[in-house]
Length: 230
Length: 73
Image (cartoon, rainbow over all chains, first blue to last red; front, side, top):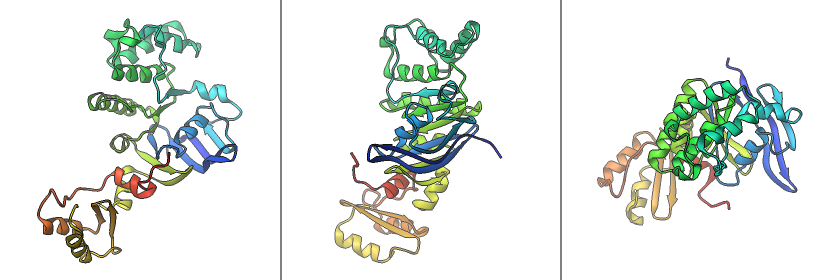
């Protein structure tokens, strides 16, 4: 049995009287792509913020790579690669510099950083744009750079919060192709998306959240057969 | 499928809900889920892909059936 890299048990998040996440439990296994789907306001991003130790858990337990998120948030952040919904690249830095500065947060060896950055730029077909200004990149390139940046610290889990929102179909399919490649290399991924085709193509298992709760969990084609008929 | 109400109701009467068949009405569109060959037979009976179209279920169907079609925000 493959071990769980993320374990959530009875997870709850309150904002005042508002219950954003309401007693959810799930496991994300090593090497799988796990999807979290739901309408806006379902609790997806709140769940991600708890996993990435950027928003405290109200109740329940949450472990990432065996680490308790509440008591070891810095260690948790070090094993995660995070691709936020909005690109937050530094426009004052060149493409390569964006990756170098990010890598410094993790205290990595200079040679190791250079090698990882070269690999990430090559993987996301940005090697010939390494010395470009970020503002000169297309939206699709900026998204790929944001994903590449999340890989610089060689994370155990890659968190992707709506990674292809706003991309045209060509750029979206290219990102899917690259995420499938990462998956084939054993990278564990947590993905939120509003594109159902994306979830079907990329996710081994997924949950659908609604009003803070998990409605269903399963493999995409099993859920289709069970809920919408064969 | 998109059929005039009388034609739609007559067709659906032949494939009652339950028994693996689920019907969802969305404005002038009627979705018929499951039922094995029933959906295929219904589409064939209409005989016009612009009015009745058969396709496999997908994740978007699952999502909308479970979370509804109303906006939350």
